Length: 423
Image (cartoon, rainbow, N blue to C red; front, side):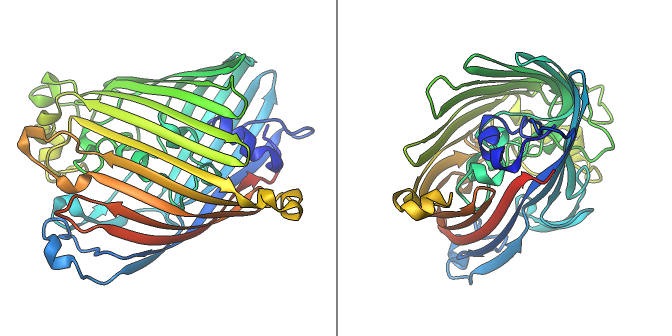
């Protein structure tokens, strides 16, 4: 059972994981989704050595892109007696299968990237038993709601054209894994606890930290090690949501085949993440913010893990991975149409917004190795126009501010997105 399209925004604000399931009177079947189309013009070099030789690429020409970041289809069904099913199929960047990518962290080599499902991913696929508002159990492929971006990743839940960059860099996005979830609502609180397969340290990188750690090139997710995720949201103050979330699990040795000796067996690679986020909606303002901090144990040993040394393995062969990573960000937007009676009554909105964030996937110089270009400050400002509640047209100017050794990276992004339910 799904919500009507007009209720999409309010429910999505509560939880992305729940947005695939709500009430539609008279229908057990529900169909919906969301999608984004983007044009970007980047006024900086796209050369692979733009960081290793910044002076040589200071005056390189700009470059442009058209992109379809996400096109998602929701499908759900209410079987009755508390049993329900939901799924979310995501097409990323308008394609599927195997793609070629130029790997900056590997000296600009061309690589044929094979990720689970290629560019088509089953982001949610679960069966749920509901015992009441306070107790629900899900089993299957679920969203891991650690951080603001993962818990609220639909395009009406952020002002920028692309998903907020900091969390999108250091954490899996959208983070989804197969496992078990217990969640519910009691008074002003929503809570969720998940049991999952551990992340795979073979996929950790110097520029993305654990970003691809949930992916598997195999037909299954390896579960030699396990992880747990927790999230609590509070709604006591009208219009304000405060969220705490976290993750703990081991990552070294969670690969196939399992190495019985060496680094893979000796070290654990513990991953610990803590996150705080908030959203305020009131007085024609929307304010969102988050702060994430991550710790990776035995980070200096990852360079010597077997699958990262084997040139024929499908895993990353990049250099060191940081012990710590962080991302903080805040954005605020004001609806100027709220001051124009006819537009406000027609349910049209125009948010003027600004965003600032700072992040670093390589916050610790492992064994003295430094990648200074990973420390990023980013500012953005622009407009979000809603001709109706389910559609948004976005435009922004943004600029990455890097250390003085490197060149800053300004860009202009324009996008259109929708989200809603059709049945």
